[in-house]
Length: 264
Figure 1 (cartoon, rainbow, N blue to C red):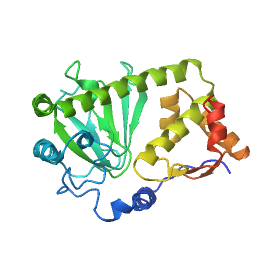
Figure 2 (tube, rainbow, N blue to C red; figure 1 turned 30 degrees about the vertical axis):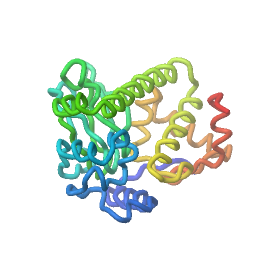
Figure 3 (cartoon, rainbow, N blue to C red; figure 1 turned 180 degrees about the horizontal axis):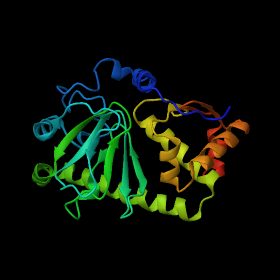
Figure 4 (tube, one colour; figure 1 turned 120 degrees about the vertical axis):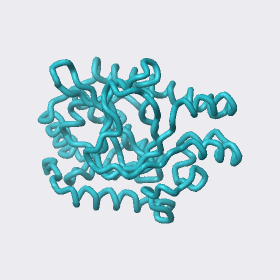
């Protein structure tokens, strides 16, 4: 079965709802609820509060702004906008991309619940990427000037934020290695395994999940054409390593996928 694009917004919203419902804690609270607190958030063990005690979480909660939900295609910020905040994904997903001087775009990353967006703007005080919602999504906005002040008061928060920054640097190095030395099949297998581990972190199935991004997005991120991405998906399916149903992917042989990229 060859991968097919999903064109209906309502279908994608239904898929998102299905994915959210897979998490037991998500049934208790609407992830788009702007009144939710850091202490009650289902992602507080993944995001910045993980390093804090209850009193410190309350201090963090005081500076967090919970904005309206973002619809598919809405921008969180655009390339070269003034850097003011970092953002924690509460639900849904986002992609980051850059535009060249000629206007050609390239996807630079994907962000799932519990992950931090916007750190690309810290050094230059302007965002290096544009970031766009891939589906109906919600975020927590954290003004960076206030986060800096709070970090000086809470060493655990500062340490954890530095760890997040370190992980982002490591991810950049990994994608550089991926693009420079991996085959198309290895890049695709690595991408699927990375999504698997990230979905597992938010208590969703590591072997069966939805791809909120398009084949074109994946191709731009991996340095492949959309035709190559579709061809690799089809080849992996023929080998019975994955099952593809529109945007739903099931990893049938995770160990074999790891062998493809040389990971035991």
